[in-house]
Amino acid sequence: MRVRNLFLRFSARFVNRRPGLLLAALCLAACVAALSPAPVEAASTGSAAEAATASATPTGVSTGSPSAKDSVGKDSTTKAQHEAQREAEIQREFAAQLYYERLDRLNAVAWPLVSANEALCRQRGKAHPSLGLVADSFSRRANRQWFQALCALWGVGADTAVITGVMPGGPAALAGVRRGDVLRSAGGKPVEPSGRPGELTRRLDELAASGPVVLELSRAGEPAPVTVTIAAAAPVCDTRFTVVVGDAVNAYADGKSVFVTYGAMNLYAKDEDLAVVLGHEMAHNILGHVRQDASGKAVGTTTPQQETEADAVGLYFTARAGFSVKDAPRVWRRLAAQDPAHISAGGDHPSTAARFLNLGAVRDEILMRQAAGLPLIPRPRVGPGQ
Ligand SMILES: [Zn+2]
Image (cartoon, rainbow, N blue to C red; front, top):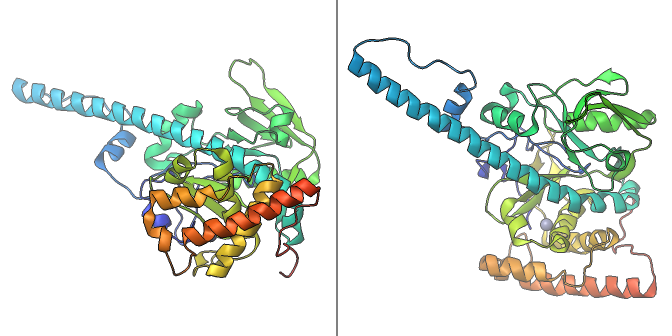
């Protein structure tokens, strides 16, 4: 898949967009972890969306009373508008729910990748401690027309920190943190909300540097706050994972995060296939293939050699994370079938035909090493200065 700066192409993605940054909103997994989504349509739009936002402050139906006929007409129009606004909110809530379901799947596949490969990432100075959770808060300013739907979905008010993702098998999950828990305090201090995607999660991960982290949580059905102690963070690779709303089949990396569209997640319905794609993109980040300008924005494109290297190192990442790589090359046949232009594509990327064959050779190498009980160290080795 490609490393591109096409963020703006996805006009409906649920992401906060900050000027000059590529960024996305949710990151997931701890480093995957991420951040959370805050769905916000990147570009704005539509009157329906604006109307829904407006409906947050219930305005009364018309109060004036010109003529009886006019009044009836206005009432009728207003009623229809309000019904459409209510329906729009319901649809946004469904959309947000689907978004988080996708994010949960992405987190579940990404967490093993970032945790099992931490030693290789650390060699390149690209690892950090993570609690294995995603926290977020919502505000009308940051989330705009999605504000109400997000608050309704998570059952919280404005500027309230809530756990929107828990990495399966991660430190937070093992300590008993649950998705939907409201975060009252962390490390003995109240949790300040943040409109910046991922910031809350990063702040919480940073707390782990000074020892065990005590979280005070409010949980539905529990009359009193629940206190959870996360004894130790897990070291993970420096890559966050984000879902991008859109049917286009694409995945890309910007040096810090990996972005995966709904279309790619649909095409790769098996987690072991999705893991191959995520491993490839993560390899671009860890190997330093993505050039960034002074503001951190990804610039330029990768070379065919870098693509081949990311295919190889990414497949090692995938195997080390515990996924079967036996059928890994099929991801290229599936992409070719979905988008035949890739079959003979040139330019920045090798063709899907070449990539199928190359990945098959790497797959054979990995299977041989696994059978022989040899360590799975990718070639070229992921090491300092390489
Ligand atoms: Zn690539």
